[in-house]
Amino acid sequence: MSTNQSIKPLSTHINSLGHLEIGGCDLVSLAVKYGTPLYVLDEYTIRSICKDYKKSFSAYNNTRLMFASKSLCTVATSKIISDEGFGFDVVSAGEIYTVYKSGTDMSKVIFNGNNKSREELLLAINLGVGRISVDNFYELSLLNQIAEENNVEVDILLRITPGLECHTHEYIQTGHLDSKFGFDLSQIDNAVDIVIRECKNLKLHGLHAHLGSQIFEVSVYGDAIDIIISEMVRIQKKYGIILDEINIGGGLGVRYTETDNPPSTDQIADVIISRLNAAVSEYDINPPVLFIEPGRSIVSTSGVTLYTIGSSKQVPNGTKYVAVDGGMSDNPRPSMYQALYSAVIANKPDVLDALQNVTIAGRFCESGDVLIKNIALPNPSSGDILCVFNTGAYNYSMASNYNRVQKPAMVLVNNSQSDIIVLRETLDDLISHDAVPSRLV
Ligand SMILES: Cc1ncc(COP(=O)(O)O)c(C=O)c1O
Image 1 (cartoon, rainbow, N blue to C red):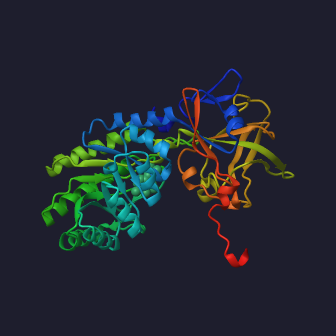
Image 2 (tube, rainbow, N blue to C red):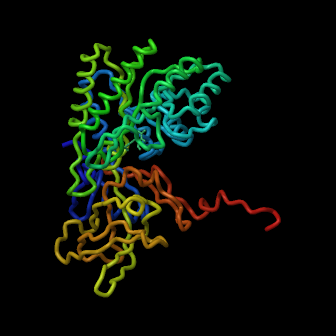
Image 3 (cartoon, rainbow, N blue to C red):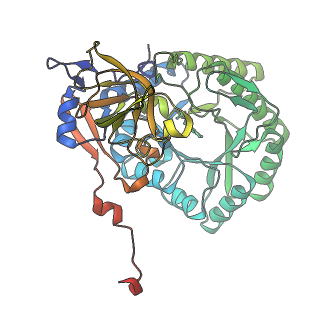
């Protein structure tokens, strides 16, 4: 089993008090010490999945593992993931700066995104970001202009849409993808032509694609490799340039609920490496450098969110709502795209009697602010600590201040030690960027 196939952080167990414990830390004590809502991250689980990836891809020497920062971006987590040997996929000045501040070697960073600004591109160049994945024609000329003005050569990939439409558990192949990202297959030649003729300050190394997220169907990676390598070989022949880098994006799924069955890192690596090796022999080319940039599968499993249960409401002959002190601002995924989660009550995780089917409601002023519909919990009562699993990815990174509620703190646990890695916002933090025109004072 690889780490992404576990619902809970790997160090989770029930301690002698009957409380849930992660990284040797009692979750009820963490809730008392740091308050709730609280993001808790298990360092051991993050390092384990990094090691899973490294082992699974060790059969292909030219692999470069990159972490997609969009799933979770803090200085401390970037340090851990960098320490495990990963580079980073970044998509904004904020992510570039955070990764830079973590002490990462910036040549191991790739800058993605469909509308990078002049300032962001300049920051990436100045901080020595290793690759820029150019998304569209506008960016080609903008980046070349910036590179020319600064008298530098910038190393690029071209982001393409290989025509594979990936849904969570299945995919279909389409001629064209109606996607806001990347060059359509029919536009690649035009883009390469422009790079060669007009972009003297850009050096093209290869092609980049991202197939989707929460992917359960590994064969889509093999099909994408076939398409991308055949395009690279065709372009090499047509334009007489060498393309020796392929970036296959991220996307490996995780296990949010018992019914999810994501593939292991071995399974995804087997497909990618075998299809890559087959393509290398078929076209008689040197093995290209392979970039893979997983996000969710690196951090999701390591994270849980602790909430305190407050009010509850029994709709006559209907739903029983149990409300917690967080919701859609710390985890927008259920309200945005009906994402499913698993949870237990941290102060009685193994109690199996008095189970009630309840719906976990958030505290925000939206009827859609529901974290989990219809979950069986043992007599959930005010003061209980709810632990929602698999919240390490796309929770904090997507959090907002809706209703002017402060974002939670984040705590890293390991070997019975807990450390704050993101401070809880204060009321003063919330108004710290407000300005009042002098005529109103
Ligand atoms: C270009 C790119 N790479 C990597 C990722 C990471 O995907 P995931 O978190 O599903 O692994 C994304 C996510 O949207 C992406 O857009």
